[in-house]
Image (cartoon, rainbow, N blue to C red; front, side, top):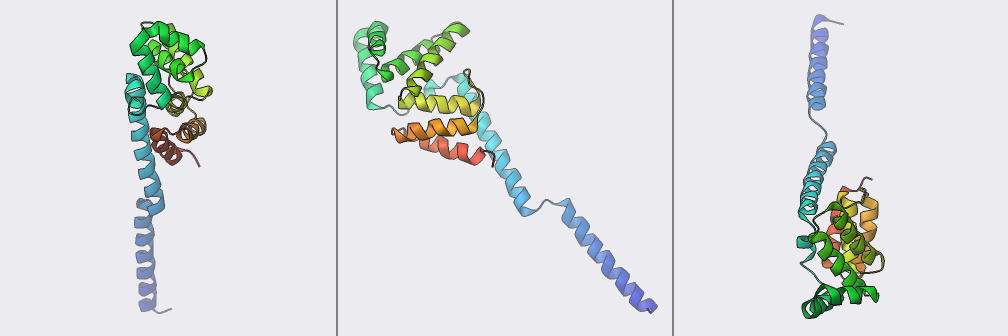
Length: 180
């Protein structure tokens, strides 16, 4: 090899080395996109946890099933006693409404747990608001529920199937942050 060919080869190797070194310093587009999506998901989850820390009633008050609206009327007419009577007859909407009232007025952790347990039980029996509340609790890992995104998605699907519009949005969010 002539000295000229050796210099040319060294120059090519140096350029290739520089290109490889520069490429290794910046993440690939797909890795960067994944990191960006993860950062967005973490911010959304933090916002959801902040809502849970303040109480879910403000989040779920946006939509009411006809059964829940009827229970509000029952409460307006007869207060907690009438609401409790309807819940004891098996009305899941009144059970959820009563549980939410107990949790929101709780002065002790035990009262709060009792209220959320009642609201969650109503969700397990088919109350769309209770199903949504269970989804949020599992999504954020609050109110006595461990964080479990796949479990939250199941509850959001059930609530969406019962007409809860916020559950559709929450399900989409949970699907975006779910591990793949």
